Length: 80
Image 1: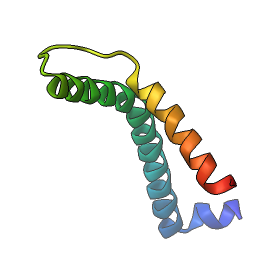
Image 2: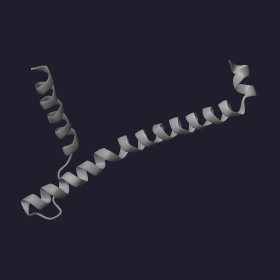
Image 3: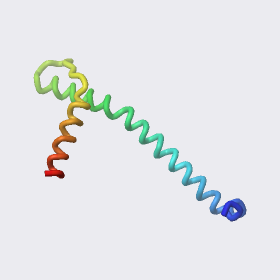
């Protein structure tokens, strides 16, 4: 199998593209997992301040609290 890949240029090019796509997916998943919680917290803090009429008011850790409530509601929906 390795000899086949070494002797055929098309397979080398195809496998190089597969490696590039896999690296891109890993980088995208990592960047998303690092940036989404902070962006969600900023968005929810701004929405809370807008709803309460207090500009600049910040809430902390809304992402973890809302994820827990989503998990509980989904588990009730699918397991009851």
